[in-house]
Amino acid sequence: MSPRKRVAFAMTTAALNRVFPPRQIDAIAETADVLGHIVEFESDRARGILADVEVLITGWGSPRVDTRVLAAAPNLEAILHSAGTIKPYVSEAVVHSGIRVSTAAAANAVPVAEYTVAMIVLAAKRVLPMARHYRDARRAFDVESSYPQLGAFEKRVGIVGASTIGRLVIELLRAYRFEVVVYDPYLSDDDAAHLAVESVGLDELLATSDVVSVHAPSLPSTHNLIDARGINLMRVDATLINTARGEIIDQDALTARVVAGELYAILDVTVPWILEAEHPLYVAERALLTPHIAGSYGTELGRLAESVREELARLSSGDDLAHGLTAARFAVTA
Image (cartoon, rainbow, N blue to C red; front, side, top):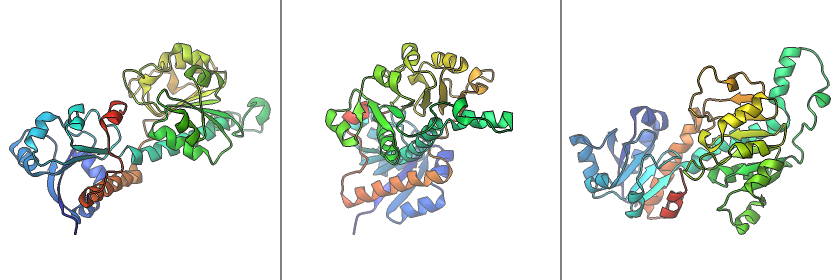
């Protein structure tokens, strides 16, 4: 019989209620001893839990785990993060300490990739501008003359970043007849061949793609990765989709070309997170803004909890974590 791990949740109450409602906590309690839920690491109660815990389940709004917290948690074996982005919550020193760290990034990647592929198809078919046109005209019109080159067959899709999400988008796109090219300085020729994609430079990708989809992590090296020069390389009527982070692109340069009627933009992320009310992208006919909904929401949150339960089962059985982070991977993740 597998030993029962001593587990505690460390995240905001709102995050706990969203990702781990009572039925999810009950499922974890079937195989582990749940010590409780804490939102900070300083109180006597929190310190008491840390002194005994073997597995911390962190999530959105978790207090940051650093070496000071490790000193208060002498029995800690692993941190299972129930979301994707982890750097704000776990210090690099923790990863180097030998504590096993896992994230639910792969689980959270699924809805983002699904959203992205849906938007790629809609962009290729010109559905969004056409729907607006039809709403305003309320009569028949010549679709092909109004939207030349519409259609998804053999369009070129450029993926910026062969991240977990980027790779899943590539996998889902295999159901279509798109030509897929990828820019990622860390993508080897063997990986590109395995993914059945062509690896190209960023300039070539931007200049030749009908749809560009951004999946790079937000790191100092990727801020303004697609700068004004890159935006201006994009062909007229191309679409830029961003579900990663707003700071990766030059938003002002993109806005200028969208407002000028030269590019389309589908943005699930912006800078700032919520644009000021007067921002021209809200009313631009060639822009679609969504309030960061590509990630896990509603029923999709269950996939995050499932990922944590599966990792906990692997820990209890002495198996390797399926989504463990090495120091090298931690360095290039968000």
